[in-house]
Length: 56
Image (cartoon, rainbow, N blue to C red; front, side, top):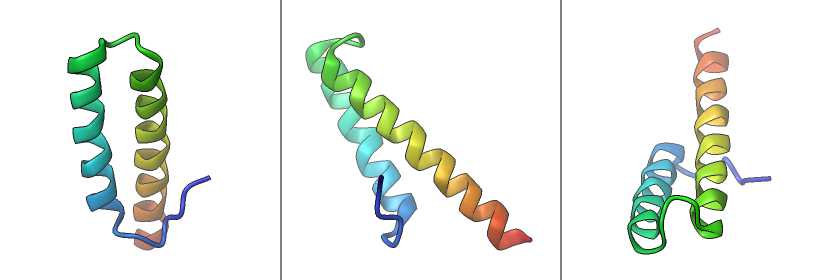
């Protein structure tokens, strides 16, 4: 779903800032906010899994 060949930490931070901005402008229950929140959750979970795999 997402290309994880990028710098995941940078991408997660960029998406987090975008999510905060959209939530402030459109509200927490706006469609854009919910979509960005889901994307952020997916990226964080994949990043965490990569960290676990790298530690193994």
